[in-house]
Amino acid sequence: MNVLWSRFLRSIYRKEPIVGFVATVGVVDAAIGGLSGHWSLLAVGLGTVGTAIALRLWQVQRRSATEPVGDHPAHILPPQSSRPSLPTLTASKKSPPRGL
Image 1 (cartoon, rainbow, N blue to C red):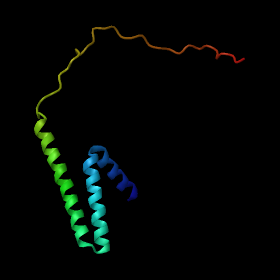
Image 2: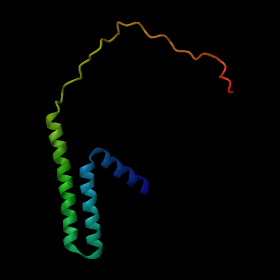
Image 3: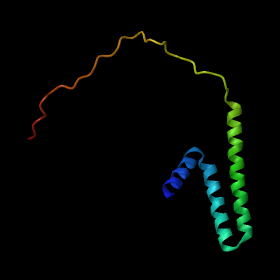
Image 4: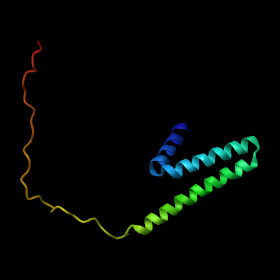
């Protein structure tokens, strides 16, 4: 379970570091508020997590709206290169240098 949790957190931070940080702060606030009986801190934490999730959804929608759906990448090089192929490199069997 611990390995899965750490992989999940790493994937969040690599993709969206700001949203991941805000969500982590909110979860910690909610955990502290829930365990200590401070209901206002729990509410702030849950609100922060909700804001982080809403921010992430907004970013995904904005990114998908700006990317064209049906475009294929243009091929810059022709299928067969007009240059001849490069020679194969081989390692020479020389003796190692002798030390002094």
